[in-house]
Image (tube, rainbow, N blue to C red; front, side, top):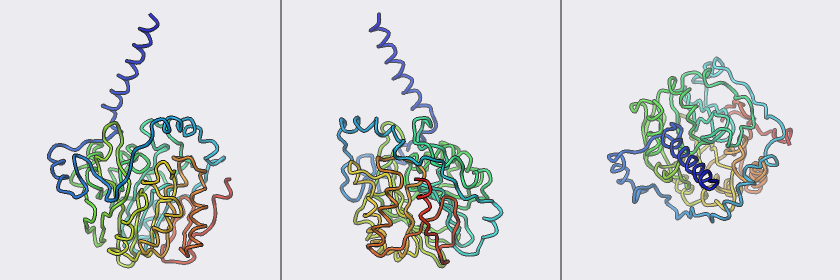
Length: 370
């Protein structure tokens, strides 16, 4: 009788998990047969999945992964001890800056508001409290408040996504944003998630690597990254991942997305550099997944590879997604930048600055919260 009850409980768990994954919209949409046929013309698509240009081993020892789980969920030694305050934004202040130069506002992790040539662009807008399909199981955001509530943002001309992982593409954020966004630029396949969530297909433009586009006077290019994609069971590598080049009238900006180190950085620098500003992944690394996330030292090398004169370390400051201390990445990156003579910009969360105006933010603000 006890065995029957246990088996019944296990069956219910599996059934509940299956139904949750199948019907919960957070997992996004899937490509249809015609779309897959279109993707097959891409050099980066083979046997039904997208691939990295550089050989990238994604295998992880199952036993090692299981042993990591208790440490992964015990994040107390790797998170701030106090709530991280943020600089506050207001919609009127953003509107007043229209056409007055290029401004950046960092929301923590990899989310930015870029104001360039009079246009307002959101990059990887993840405003949710936790990067997980189940909020209670994910890492909580270090800050209980956002610099500005989504409802108070002005109209957004363009949203750019690098890939579909939860810490970059957030379902609740899209629901709140979609009525105020004019256009979405995304890597191949990612548009299906947005369509599933109610975004009009007419507002979505998908790009392959090295594909270029223009948007209201801006020149953009979808460029390679060394990473992967997937939001649920069985959808790994089904959408493309990317970095982005955004070139305006006076400023040339690079956004790395998530990426392991590789020769693509030099290729991007040779084709689209030099850049006068870059946002470079720096955080959530581990030797178990060093193919898909750079170490801080590699971040600085990659910055030189793309020929960027200055950089912001990103992919840190909001969530704990690896086993290193929450400030280790920025500490190591700034130390390496000094060795390699790379200029590092260090804004507070929510702080807006003009990319061509000195002095640029350089305060080690995190030290107040150790």
